[in-house]
Length: 93
Image (cartoon, rainbow, N blue to C red):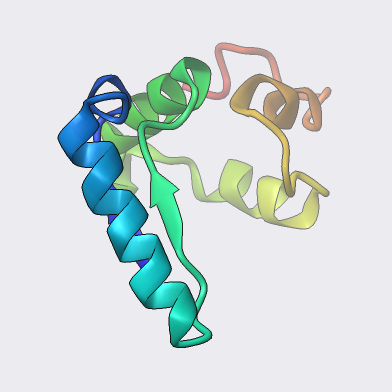
């Protein structure tokens, strides 16, 4: 089970109490319990940036194919772009 709460609210006593109670109830059943908040600022900015490019007509099929063939798992956006050294930054937009 996952509870989600903004980071600034996690320190509030009522939230801590509720999450503590929930953790005990969930884990007593043998289930896993986690609390999630906002991702780190850089990751959130990448997500927001990428959310603006949901339209397939904005992407070059050739560049997408090159990225699919590259080993980019776990890389941030800037590192993934470095995997295409034959492309200038102008080609990627």
